[in-house]
Length: 267
Image 1: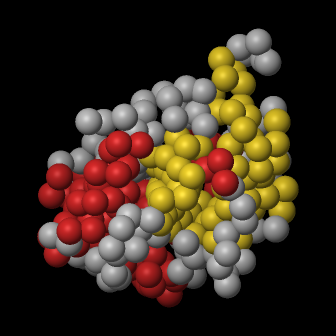
Image 2 (image 1 turned 180 degrees about the vertical axis):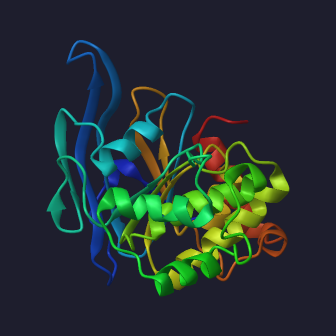
């Protein structure tokens, strides 16, 4: 089975039965005005409802900038973004964001840190919903622990829970596992897949790891070096559910890694 590759130059709306949760149309982003640094140039793609999409590319290509545009945290100069049927212009309801660092408050325990995300969003969380989230995150028994009493993986699970507790339809993740060791990263990848499958969220993940993108995603979007342009969209046709060792033993997994590496200029 050949790796399926869709060149970005042939962009067209996704031919899927699911509606698009996100539509990015000819987006350009400049820092320092139109005469400044061009971070992203003429980027277009669609993401279907409940789809898991990763964005990869060289360092400095605008991956994290793209995620912040989707979240409405920074403005864009050209083009248009719609999410959940609304024009993105500032913060959006129904969207959760997970950053590179866990950003937990050290004086709050697990439950209080989880509730913090809801408090900021003005969402009321019932005791039953909190208990369900603790179970979903695999943190039963650690409800009253403080961040310094948790492993790195547990802290990142709490950070994911801060976003999920508000029940967003879209989850945006900016390299949340980049600083973790390989074993912990694999475990959290499986936790993320389990949560995604149970919650049916639309997920956009920024990652530097090609193998992680292949392991997790329905599709991988590849950005060029700065100015970031979308150079390819690769469908990941690996069976689900996925388990790291079994999936990596699949010959097609290796084919995807090689193809994406080539697209990023890795020999």
